[in-house]
Amino acid sequence: MSTTISQDAPPATLASGAGIATATAVADAERVAAMAGRALRAVEEVIYGQNQVVEECLITLLAGGHVLLIGVPGLAKTRLVQTLGTVLGLDDKRVQFTPDLMPADILGSEVLDQANDGRRSFRFMPGPVFCQLLMADEINRASPRTQSALLQAMQEHRVSVAGQYHLLPRPFHVLATQNPIEQEGTYPLPEAQLDRFLMQVDIGYPDEKAERDIVLHTTGTEDTDARQVMNGEDLMAAQKLVRQVPVGESVVNAILRLVRAGRPETSLIPEVKQTVLWGPGPRASQALMLASRARALLQGRLSPSVDDVLTLAKPILQHRMALTFSARADGKSVNDIIAKLCAYANGA
Image 1 (cartoon, rainbow, N blue to C red):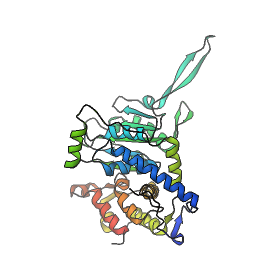
Image 2 (cartoon, rainbow, N blue to C red):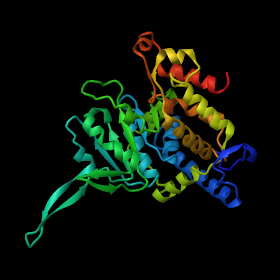
Image 3 (cartoon, helix red, strand yellow):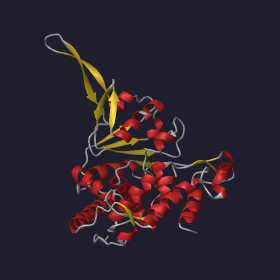
Image 4 (cartoon, rainbow, N blue to C red):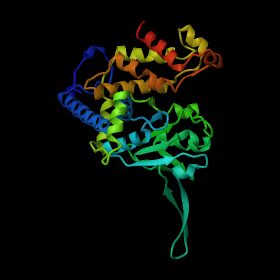
């Protein structure tokens, strides 16, 4: 992957983020792009046959967001999160979500301490959420009450326990996994929580070549260990730089055209009005803007293109839309609608 920054968009077309204009800023962008490229390759050395999945996860982290990983068992979802934590040098923790898991098991709780002189006071014991990379394994197996414990943490990067706010470490990211086929004993994630995930990344089966690599490299006496490439400060610096990447007016227009066309209230597409129950909100527009910038930087470009928006439309929109019952009964899917939105946003 090339790490030489190419300046595609002329200054007159830039709508925002004109921070990368000086030679020093361009040099910083090249350094971050090279570092992110090394991190991408380091993860791919451990995770075989899931290059697109790895890239989408890294884009989400560069954009400062959270990821919802969906796939059948055995597709290395847990190993992917652990590898990302090692490669990025983050303090990672794992919580196995179960029906009996309580909010205090995630956030922490107040405990009563007694001093030597007999005086008593409450002390806060932090839970596993106080880390930089939290893996919420099988998140849909916990009750809605426990799922909601993550809402404030994911949005505000702080939690409230016993009326007191406690700040979470920076950076803070949630990578949640979900099994799409084992639905017995699960609780669907509410729309408010789904919206807080910047991307829903679907993990499919590897192709034959990748599965051959998996069989040959993971069943021997030695296993490939992940190597650290970045640390938390590097990631935060990259996230800050992503927000300075300039965006052309055509890209902004494509984002607005795409997202607003997905809402039955504002869409000009008849099929959307007939089949979509509810569409993406403003968080979808924000996610497309940040993720497009991060993808451009990861690929060594100074500014994103409309192609970045169209490529990221599916993982960013699919969990932010729902179809009517009649549309689902007719065999229509959200991805079918997203394909029509992309064609509409591209002027087709």
